[in-house]
Image (cartoon, rainbow, N blue to C red; front, side):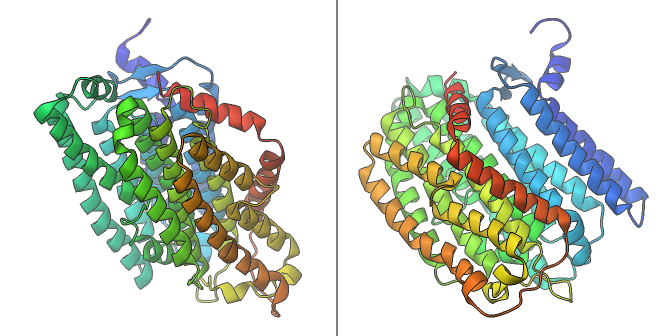
Length: 491
């Protein structure tokens, strides 16, 4: 590995992960020492930490793929892309968090340290090259998010949200770990390259253990990305958790889970992924349909975006199914997964920035869709920004969401997944209704929508809506980045 000790070089290679872990500990200790906490100082340090980690990820762009910590992590373009997406989700969540948490009466410094620990786990999942590292990173992320969901201890809905997520999350983690155990029993290793080698020669009893292990892994990851039928927790958890936490869960947790799942399907399974295409096909189809249809009946905006997240998990699984069906090598649509994950993160970040402004006098979330009535007249710029995010989520031009859906469906059709693309089109058509419904309230219903005053939330909305239009009109550079990142996972 060149000069210096391997452990030191590994720490340098994984500098973004190390930085977040270190600063998480620093803020945790500081929160215990300073009561009441210096609110702006904690917020500023956490934002600076995430921004610095993002710069470190950007500085590593273009470098050749390298393994760290004895092959447990693989620092490559694929990991860098999904690490950047997770960090962007974290940064936008932090932008809205300070004023929002003050309004709802949560004044604890531990919030910021937990966000950093969650992001540390997300980056570990993005770079993970070993199933045990994937599991450890998943638990670091999940435990932090469990606590964040219930951090408003005086709110029964928040406590219920955290408890429900913890119980179901622990159950799914156990299933995932069982899958890891069966894969280890069949291959003698938890390393993804070793698993890929074993898959090419597996037969008899080993093949049976691998199949069972793969099925359990599929269930475990299905829960984390909120795929049907493992999605039942989503709406209640999203609605009960503080909005700043929901924003992080909706984008960051999904990006990290898709990153780890994608590395397993594309990198480790390789040609054997075709054997799992049937399961991916049905999971994707059910997720797209159930998510979109369930969202139609919701009146609370957080529940609408919860089921929207389920539907979008289906679109992302459609990309994985396309790669499994058509093969990763030479697949022109392979970058659609990464591109759409970035688009979804930006769309969600903007939408939740608006939701963070919707609190009542008691400090509780007030996100019923009726509270948007008249927003186009009382807050025209906020209404315009939210409209851009909604139009992009619906997959309409000239937004990044349209380009993302176009490449997702093109990849599916190009891989012969015409039936899956048809199911996705039905789901997307249903989605147009519930994405445009808030716009009807904003512009066509009488009312005087009241929003909290928060310049940073408005900044987050402005940045995300501008990027959605810019990347919708000029997507080439991002598409090339996405394609290069997905190709790097092939080694």
